[in-house]
Image (cartoon, rainbow, N blue to C red; front, side, top):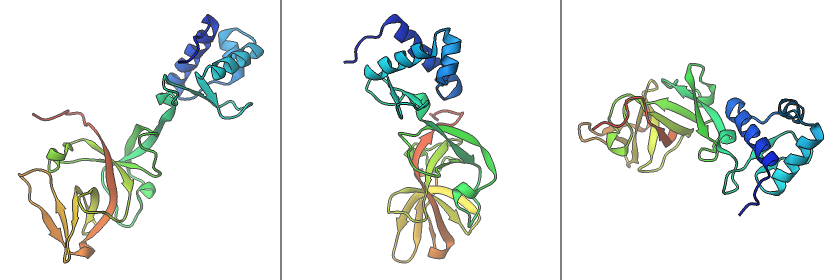
Length: 211
């Protein structure tokens, strides 16, 4: 259990959290001292106390980078957020991070999604409904050019049509299987399918969960 904070220490900690929630980063010591109307030395001393009591973590003794820790000693979630691009369609031959036609960005927790060059693909239709992937959801994907059986992947069909399906490799074809009995599996020649990524998470779209 962490030691209890003094009133002044709690005031500084609350101030830092407020700034992080607003700006995504901690303010400099000079800014904190000015806005809290205390001396630079007092801010530094308080930060040292907060670090000793395990409420914050600094990257170095003189670093301005300060991470707020939660109750279990992990980095405060606002500081773990990172942006990944949302795409409406996939272009053949280009890796996801090289795409230019983004439709905005999505904030995700970097601890839950630590991979590099992640992207989010807007889902169209309900062919994967029974896997919990609904129309207008955002599928969080890691870029990949291969797949294992039963993985849910982003596949590019005939170099032009992107689809999210469950992948199965057979001796003579690739099967892309939906998760909805109203839709049928489709089988393709090997050269007709390019794997572009693996779905690693879902962010619910604006329509919520269908009944």
